[in-house]
View (tube, rainbow, N blue to C red):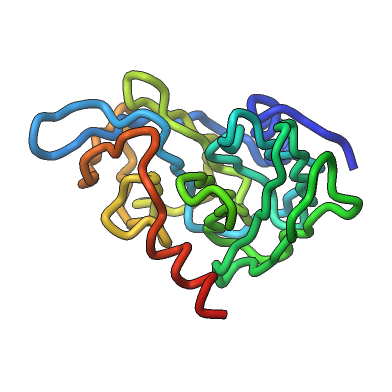
Length: 213
């Protein structure tokens, strides 16, 4: 498997023969029409995707990146670049795993063979949190600073399109919300977000679930 950057994933995911048009939309909040940055937006469809090798590393007691998108079947490594040990785990239905206390690089990467949202935590540092979006579609992207995203759409795909939208600050960030995208370009859609937490916020619920095992 090749390691690729997030920017290159879209080109690897989508078969060029199926590319027809690029449709753009903007995600905002309903209360003040503020652009939503970093929302993951994808079509509710199954495509032939190519697995990749990727990584989420730990540095300064944080996960980097905090959101990673990979095609289903991909392997992810979790190197520790801190001078302290970490204990990375997930309870998510799409992938449950546990890498006990370690420094450096775990010997075996983790295989993500089911689509879905995977929430990561560290049993040593409660505030650490990250997400892996395991995708079974090639039409997936993240909104920019203006809340805008562009997705490739096959001209044979019937309209309206069913969209899935996910953001770490959704009221329930264990699953995406569903929206309908009509045939128009530059459409605007809204999602509700919870207030942004301080950078040193805790993950009390996730930590409690680990301790109860």
